[in-house]
Image (cartoon, rainbow, N blue to C red; front, side, top):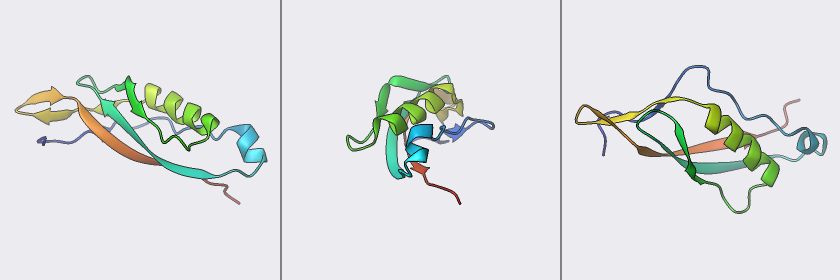
Length: 94
């Protein structure tokens, strides 16, 4: 339980749709669990992807998360790490 939950900073990058998967018309959606630390960075060692997710989509999401910044969660007036769950969707747009 926190007083203020993690919030994304403006301008965070979107995952890049892998060109090879786009050409093949492959789409996918999945939920990623990750920890945002007290400095507002994603802890690389605490990112969890579903085992069924395509490797190229995983790589795209991971690259975006590691470049992203967040306003960290707070508890008792102090920044604390928080587990976040976020859905990522790779869909073909006509």
